[in-house]
Length: 121
Image (cartoon, rainbow, N blue to C red; front, top):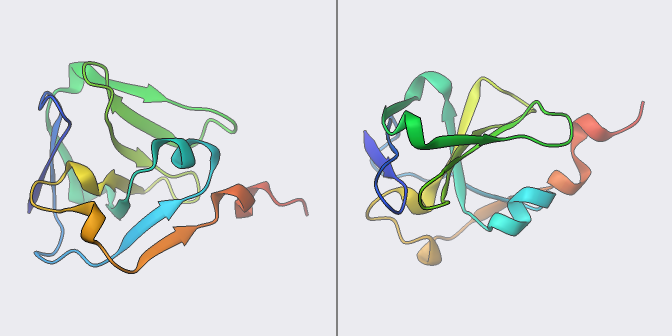
């Protein structure tokens, strides 16, 4: 179990992940490119908000399926539910104490600019 905290600490979540997290993602979609976060992902049931729901704000755009959450006090992106699979929770690895995102290797790039749900049939 790892603790996720935004910058000011008002939003906190427990994430059921292995002791050594190994799967990291960056996305090139319009929002992820601008926020620049390194992310990882778990099933919704492995992500539990334990503090700060009153400070959590939701941002949606385009199809309005994905849900992007951030702290209304410090502005930090904490987590999201992707539109490709809303039963998952992506989270900001930089919000996990003890993980230096600048030292991570093998970060997968997700091609959100060419999202499969945007392709015409």
